[in-house]
Every structure is written in C-alpha cells, then in structure tokens.
Length: 205
Image (tube, rainbow, N blue to C red; front, side):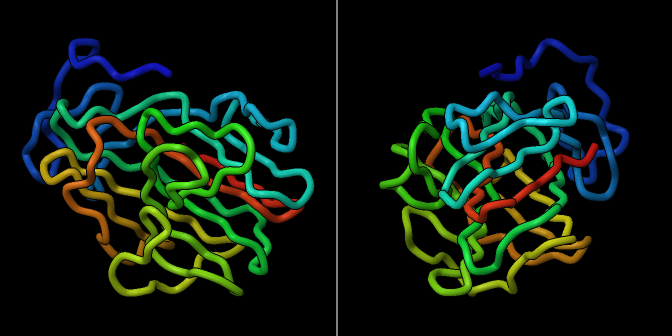
C-alpha cells in the first residue's frame, strides 16, 4: 500500500480550519478538513468486486468481507483528513462496519472491522448490526455511547486528525461522535466491512 509522502505536494494552509500544515495528497475543503484521496484495493476475497474505477465495492453472497483503501494516513504528517462513503445498499440484519484499520490489517478470509480476532490487527469502526453489537467498536468492545445506525442511502463522513490521533463520524452532514482519541497506531488505512448478500458502498469524490 502506498504511504503518503510529506514532500510530494505544495503546501497550502488557506482552508485548514485548525491552521495546521496541509497534509500531503489532500485537497483543502472547508469546513470539514482535507479530502483524503484513495480507491479500493483489489480484494483478496472473490466474494467482493471492485467497480467504478476503484470507487465502488460490492459483496456477493452473505459473509463478512473487508475492503481496504490503497493509500494510508501516517500520523507523523500533521493535518486533518476526511473521506465520505455513500451507502448504496446494506442489509440491517447483517453487520457492517466503517472506519480505519492499522496498516498491518490482514483482510484475507473472514474479517470484521472493529474486532481484534477478525483481521489480525487493530481497527476502529462504527458498527451496525441489528441483532448484535451496534456502536463504535475497537477490539470487539463498545466505546462511548451507542450512535444511531447508518443504512441504505446515507452518506458517512470520517474525519481523521493527526493532532490528537482521533477519528470522528458524521452521517448526512450531522456530527455523530468522536469516540476514538489517541489511537494506538502510527499509520491507518480506510476500511469497510460488508456482510449482506448485495451490500454495496461507493467512495464519494
């Protein structure tokens, strides 16, 4: 995976609300921070297909499978980042996660973002599963208050801040929570777990 290098972009602080140095490979967009540009990696599991020039991931058949981005955020590079995901279709009866994973996350086989035992590395996620755990998860444990669920048609924004190594979540432009602060990782990648037979998500750019 391509880690973003600090010296590959002209720096511009104009639209950064926190007056931090603009992060490499990011486009300044006020008021939410800096857009983080990535696409989906080719999946290791044949149950997921990538379409729309790497922007759309689709599940085929019921089963937990995790998509990873092809670029990472290194917290040694100061800045605030965000990306947005359109929930094209999910099945509320099955578990779906949106968040980030440590750069060492292994998404081969059965993986569930937010669970230590399903992914073989740390991950932090907003998990929606009607018949089981709902909420913000890290290592399979709920963190903070449980938020409302996300569902088909929603747009989820994830904001990552290097200053306090935090992850915040928005749904349809409404702030949902900032459950993860001072996370135990120096480099993370966008990550998403799909489970339902026809689950589908798209990166918005």
